[in-house]
Image (cartoon, rainbow over all chains, first blue to last red; front, side):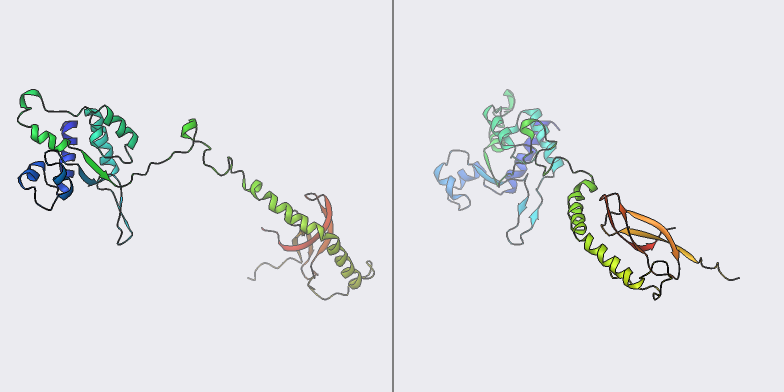
Length: 217
Length: 58
């Protein structure tokens, strides 16, 4: 399948899924309530179809859960690749694989491919069907790469540049704790000496202590 | 046959109360009182109180 065919199939599938009336249908039955707004205003023009962007995930307002995009990232990438090949980027909705800016740029120089001269007359209607403008609904969130503008994203957006070793990270806390303990050290030593003085007044005499007496510090 | 007899002395660690992780290793009689001593701790560069902790690991 050619690249153009793939895009065409994608467009037709999306247009069909929305169950919008085709221009021909609008012409034949203009008073149907299916398409009231633009059918009344521009009967002869091709209506702008409003279709949910199938490249972005959808939030279900009832359940509050996200549904994945209709087209997987792999499929999206494939479509974008094929659109690039055939110069039909403007026909794709924006998504994670193709930005709004890119599409806008492509729309500016859009070469909407028509059929070859010989079959032009036969498929004129059909061609306009799938290339007709579509308004993709849904907000596309652009992923911002920190530091990309300066060409170096190594440390961009990082809380600190270097993590350091564990001992470096806890050094300050340890120092504080040590200082606290050292502040009370003279007192502790004094208590220790008093304890032994009481228990063993003469260091040369054997101790008269109880076995395994518990130290108070 | 009975198991090996316990040694009369045990090897103990005297750990710094400045909590620097520095320790001295010494021996004391198994039945004797717990050890404590004021000794030099090079981490804080001062004489601090050392108290006995667990036996040294084998």
